[in-house]
Image (cartoon, rainbow, N blue to C red; front, side, top):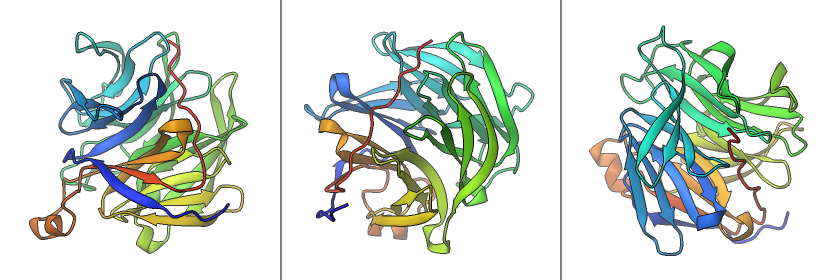
Length: 301
């Protein structure tokens, strides 16, 4: 990979309390993302620079494209379909009904069009929560839900290898990026293993995406950076530092998926620290990485 000059800019000073789940929508040249505690799904048009926001009735933690139009999102403990035009959310499935204190966190659609998302206990303060309360779920195209495993602290970043044979997953408080064997035909996962353990200054692994070379990019919460990993060797290949501490997630987008978009959080940053990072909660664009991403998969149900 040739080292280009990496450029980082805040393209949208949104002041998200906790921005998450960036997804590129090629059809509208837009970036979708959520602000979890503000209960907002946002769509930023990269051409007009306009932002449209839809407010839902519970914390919204992930958003994804839907093949039949509109979007799907994880809202509270529900998988929902979002109708952008009439600003409504239709419940497709509800989970964790025995755990009143839980909510969904990060989610993503697999190459077969299934929507994977995990849960966590509601935080009492950023990063402070009851342990082992979360699980990983999958919403299938026929709208039935399967639970894959539980005992999760903070279900977070997820993606699939380019050959669709490996599922990558982050449970944040394990400080690890894990891999599973993946059966695309059934959606089954097996043989969990760690492919990268975060170093102390990298802090907490959060959202994640894969690039067109099969390498993983992980946003490091409290670490103020995204790191590029080789899941086969377990080596870190690159670190890109941002002018904000609480980087939460990343995705590729823009023309031919050559730009990276990074979300971050403002909650949990004291007044002194905000002076040092006034753009906390904004949407950042990184160019010059010298690598492209791949388009997101739409939910097919």
